[in-house]
Image (cartoon, rainbow, N blue to C red):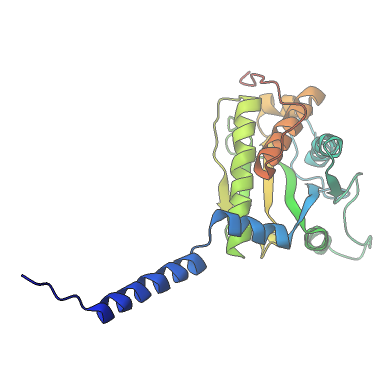
Length: 257
């Protein structure tokens, strides 16, 4: 039996397949294409570190009166030291106990805080870092047993920036679990209701390094050696995300009390 082949139909089918593949590549970009876009949008050697709060804004406070702002700065400065050792161009939103707002006694505290956050956001937009990491401490007075470090990333904005922020957050969270070993094994979470996360210009995360409301963890957070361990863990996560290798890998410590 002689089979008749419809060449026109075959050519049409091949054309449809080629068109579908081309559309798939356009709609679903490869990881290399995504990475290339991020690198085009950002500076590969720039790391921005944002120690939360400062000045009149102390942030969270422990039962003993220890304020968040100073611990944030200490951890951030340790990260800066590690990063500069590896050749990063580090941009700090602050390097002293000072807020990013205009001192005016007539203005409300709320307006100063808003100005401060907008100034930090502007610094990120201007620096265009490969990664922006904001350092904070948590508090949950309703249950003082709650503890553990956790990383957050934006869920709104440019899809590529959001996806890279998630990868950065997951890399840091993984290293916090390994390095701090506090038994909590928290996971990186997406957040939308954060000013710094509104239409981010670069991959960005917020790292809540622990709970000042937890008496045991609060004492750890005040400890300079523990602050250095936190900084090293966060930095190792940044390095893992960037594809670089840290010169000084972290030493695991048990923080479960």
